[in-house]
Image 1 (tube, rainbow, N blue to C red):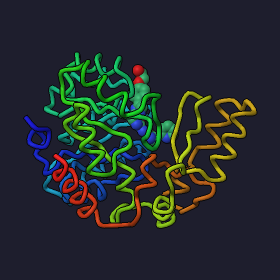
Image 2: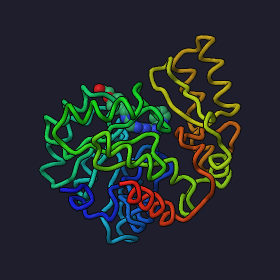
Image 3: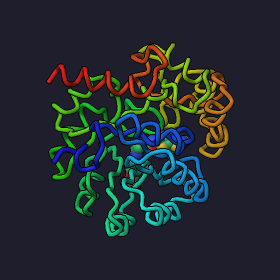
Length: 303
Ligand code: TUI
């Protein structure tokens, strides 16, 4: 069965669970535009997540999901909330969601963990997840080591569940490539940042539109939490401190709240403008529906 038929969505496209960005209102807008909208619970607490789920329900009749960022201190409570609120799809990031899978499946939730390695994909497939989102390091935000080109076919060969490709996808050509690698759907984030509906500051959107192919950089490798974002004075300073051997605590303090600075305050110098390598392909700010239909039309014309 096709992934869009299984999940009752128009296009086989998931929206990435962008922390501090993907609100209930944005996820509803993405679902209404034909993809799977996903609330990014990363920067929320449990109570905010519940409120955002209710907002999303009030704004769309279509299915939507919740992304639980597993490093969030409230992840455990959030794992219960998605059951109580009867959310149809859960994606996870930045960790192993193994201990929650049984309860989510018993509640009828479609579970799609994001992985950056074959080993975790295999472990989770054995636990009965519905599919795996294989995310390459072209992505914005917290990333693994492998590229989408190398990771997706290796995950497809290793598991018997549907695989969604993520990282480096912003066009129909890239979507078609992902399907050739064995994926049955794609997850996109960066190209949705430059949508009219996206609730980030206008400066953040314009920074993505202005970005070229080499505009992103990875910080935090030394702290064991690599994050891709647009180069700016903040990433330069971070990398300088990293090279000088700053410890994890100091670096964390430095990044703390910097995503919010960019999203809410529009601080493109000292905020963290998380974005993927496809930023260079994003040329204008457009309505969500137009971004999605153009991608799908390009994909259909290649097949
Ligand atoms: O999670 C993401 N992307 C994110 S989360 C985020 S919020 C944040 N902000 C600052 C620092 C750190 C996080 C921003 N972007 N993508 C999914 C993803 N998951 N990428 C890589 C992984 C991953 C890594 C290790 C998944 C599992 C994993 O497992 C380790 C283990 O326990 O086996």
